[in-house]
Amino acid sequence: MVDKAWYKDWFNSPYYHLLYQHRDEEEANQFIQTLMGYLKPQIGSLMLDVACGKGRHSIALAEMGYDVTGIDLSAASIAEAKLQETSNLHFYQHDMRLPFRINYYHYAFNFFTSFGYFKTRREHDNAIRTMAQSLQKNGILVIDYLNVHFAEQHEEKTFTTSIEDVNFHISKWQDESHFFKQVQITDSENKSPRHLYTEKVAKFSLGDFNDMLSGQNLQIEEVFGTYQLGAYDIDKSPRLIILARKR
Image 1 (tube, rainbow, N blue to C red):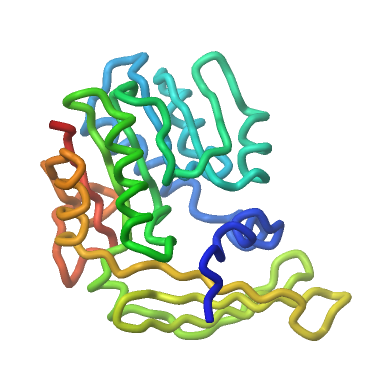
Image 2 (cartoon, helix red, strand yellow):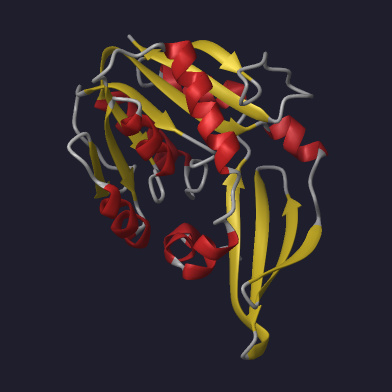
């Protein structure tokens, strides 16, 4: 059984940061550049990065001249992100299911499948509500999620990787409603698995997002399928990138 709040311990774990420390920074930064080129925000625009982690995207946006706030549930991530704060870059530990600054931001972002973790649909609706309420009228929300249909067909089952004398044995599976990824951890001092975490992400389709967004006065305007903002193809696109406007 997957813990109903698995993300709290896992995202605060040093093992999580070790495993994912080499996520493709170049791809992430290029995506931000491409997205800003498309959106063309005014310099000084107010932006909210929801589930910002250690703030890599927030930092990139701030360096481009925008006024950026990052929020995340992980105390460890926010503590590290706060070391990078500037006059136009701020970080707060905050649960995305709870309101944060009403009618304030021009743009809100939820990058790299930082959604779909909660146990109930109500909790996910609450998170969408937080994003919607944070925006001024005509504000833009961008949600970057995995494309369920593509992920179902391209699932890597089991693999092992070693980072700094720590071995990660990773197994993936899925059921009708969720993707799962179990991470078993052993290190040089402990030959038997010392920690076990299981990630769980909901299989939200474009239709699901349309229902959640429209329920919070957000209208989908564009849907992309790649980090290069290519057209969305339900079978071939690796990503589901949704651009919605607050009515």
